[in-house]
Length: 120
Length: 130
Image 1 (tube, rainbow over the protein chains, first blue to last red):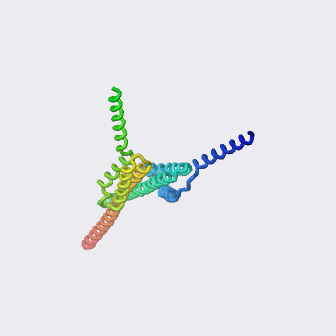
Image 2 (image 1 turned 90 degrees about the vertical axis):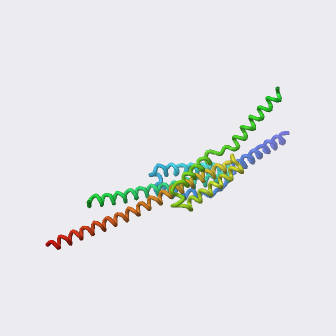
Image 3 (image 1 turned 30 degrees about the vertical axis):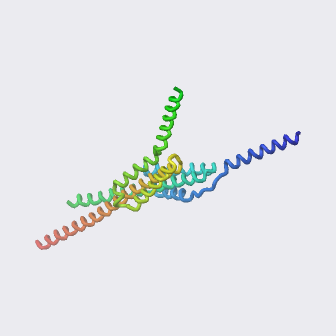
């Protein structure tokens, strides 16, 4: 009777561990593309441009969410979330370059105006 | 009486389910709007390839919405389509700013050249007088 109880308890623990193990099997996802894009956005100065900074932040949050989904074993959803993060980081890069291009265009126009004004 | 109540409740539930199934997620609404804005702007002329990428991404999101309206996949594809449309718009703005810079640089060179020519002419006139 005592042995039977021990076997039942061991069986219960084994099943519980198996279920818990299956439930939280961490999936491996390739984060390279999104982390590279986030790094590139930081390097082009996305943190200094308000709109770009917002998308960089969204990209970072997307990466964290993807990691959490991968931990929960939701591989496909995690990969989808990584694509979202990558898209946000790439947009942050475009917006940073756009800001730099705008500054350059304004400076070039000012240079012409100044030259013409000084030589009237 | 019971039957009538049952029919009314069933109709209301069916209507609610029908409405919620056909309503696009916010991400898709945003993506459609972003694409519309990008295609109405300079993107079609300045960065057609990027606009095409945005169009393809939106079509993929629309297809996913038809197949599985409430899935995370539909929302994520729409989110990506929205970002691609904004990217196309941003790249078009960049291209326009670069063109403006190039024009200003050319204007600067022309202005410099005009000033130099004018100075040479003034010098020639003063030398003739002397």
